[in-house]
Length: 414
Image (tube, rainbow, N blue to C red):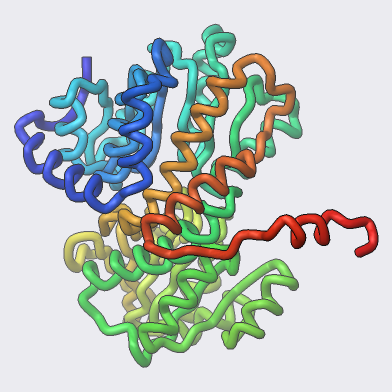
């Protein structure tokens, strides 16, 4: 039995999913193959990813392969109620709605996990965490899982260090076809889709402060520059800081950047990246947004305590009046701006990422009981298969080594 907001929204959601399907050729090809080979027959899959149309199509692809799908969202503000309704109308079980409270969010996760899943597909680690705590009695049913994000991998690594992780997890985020394209190009575009549609302000000529220069930060900085902004990067890693400088960006501590920024985007996976000392020196009109998984990178609670007045300016923009009659604005409650205030990454980008998810889940089923390590890299053949399919659908071709070249590269005389 599903728990969603309104089944009457199903037709709208179905149209969104159909549009995604038309623009996801790799997933379409996998859906056709899976419907014939049924690799997930009698397999229960629990999935927690931002519940919008691309995620919904991934769910339908897995279901075409025989999977029993139990679905929830991974963020209270990223679930699209019409998409959730469309999945229920298609016969899948869903527990999610937009704007759920923290308590409702946890209830939705429980509703998914009580079905004793065999495969877990997670985004941020909430499913895996609750599986190990509240549903430990069902851990022996879990073959393994896949993790979508940097934040989730950080949590998994912490569990592994404490020897708490009880089943293998494929680190999908670390696949080349994920982080090189999804994290960089997907995040870069979708962050500014969310910012622009929410604020209706120009980026060109402004100062954009990007906190974190991992693959997501690289994408955000690149897109800001492309929109005509000047860019400052803040970092804790000296190597990444040098890379940002050589890419043409200013680098400085956050408290210095806070004095200069017009737009702020956090993409670090850490907490209180923008905090009280930074709010104190910000310009009037500074706009703060977050593209990390959890809503902890901007210290919104600290900002609320400092504020002399709090007022909603428009949908997904909350204003805070500080000393000196300065207003700073936080987008989407400090949650993922590209999903809480937008539609997330472009369909073609998620086509590759979700193909990695689907093939990694298939790998886990095929190797059930054989994997000894708890943290598993995406198999190279999976990464290469997705890349080859994408290149083919792009209408591009590459060279192939001749036998002579292969012999040369394999030669010990090199």
